Image (tube, rainbow, N blue to C red):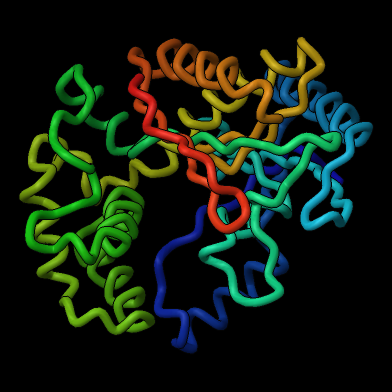
Amino acid sequence: MEPIVLKSKTKYMNRKSKKYKKFQKKQKHNKKIDYHETTRTKRMRKFLKSYNMFLKKQKFTISQKQVDVFFRRIFNEDFKSGGRFYASFQSLKSSMDKCEEHEMSREELYIDGEETVEIDYSGMHINMLYIKSTGELYKGDDVYTVKNYEQYRNVFKVCLQVVINSSSKTAALRGINNHLRKINCGLKAAELLALFEDKHEEISEYFYSGAGLRLQYLDSKVAERIFKYFYSKAIPILSVHDSFIAPISYKDELIEQMKESSKVVVGQALDIDIKEKSGSYKQDYSKVAA
């Protein structure tokens, strides 16, 4: 399987529409783009092939079932858009509390018989935009929480992704409406956007700009640095885009490298959260300041 893939750019569409179904049918036959090999693509492929071979020698188990881990790096349109690392295990929910009966979660993942820890960047993309716009991280409370609308935090999180990936406000409204129809939360897309724009007025110039894929490229560069560091020490590390999974004995080293790698790529060490374990995995993990 080819580890480096270049795909055509997708767009927000009504998933129930005939137009979307025709688009999906076309995408099945025409979503990969041929590209000219360069020194950079050869270097990326060489590393990822070596890293996948290294991972193949490790033992990954979830709920005592062995799983294979193979990463692909997928770019969109060009090699400065997207570029995130993808693997099948990423589709698992992060914790048992979010799972239906008989579903597996990532917190049940063991690497070579050792319990793991998952650490993620807190509000990674929005903080990248604040650094770019103001030179500083976001100084307020939680980036996705709007006063008097605290119960809709997850909705605002989706709102951010739509806002930075959409090329226009009209497209953003359409994308948010699609999400709202699924969850029946009672809010209107226009109301959500107005609240979000007001909360993050300092970075509003990047809204509806299609900046999302460029931000993904930056977070993929952070991930690449972290992978290469631990690979040089023969330590298996996994990622779920802006979060990283390591054997628990390497927790402190992973935190240090996540801070260092984000500082090198975006200019400042980003805030980090250690995901709490649920169910039978009760440990007191607290937020780690960058």
